[in-house]
Image (cartoon, rainbow, N blue to C red; front, side, top):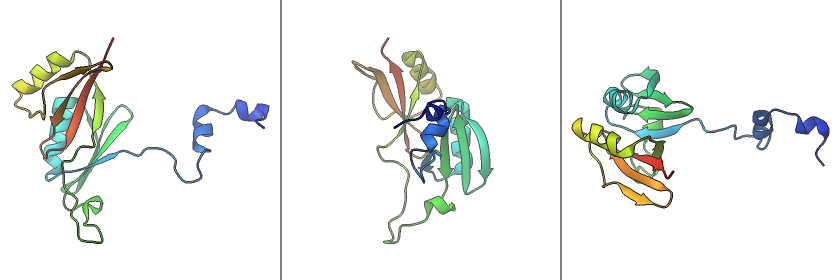
Length: 146
């Protein structure tokens, strides 16, 4: 049974009390080959802010509450798995950025010489396209349907 005192707790306090160990999302980790180059890409083309860097191994960039942890080959977050498998950039999991006027933004990025994995797709929820960072990590640019 929920008491009156529990219903007045701030929402964040209630959320953190739901699990004894998991406190929230710290960020999304991307494996990169050149951390400085990646910081420049995210800041210049997508408006991220550099929060912290330990070159050449690591940097943390943010956009609002979203954080991307950029791990170079020297970072502890890039070490091989116990079976020897190397962590590498690329794959299909991705961060999704909400965009205003997706077609215009695509044209701006194309003029800057950036690489896209596909053409813009349109569906009932909106339209999207996959951009690649300099190491091939996908970033989905998404404009919700109005």
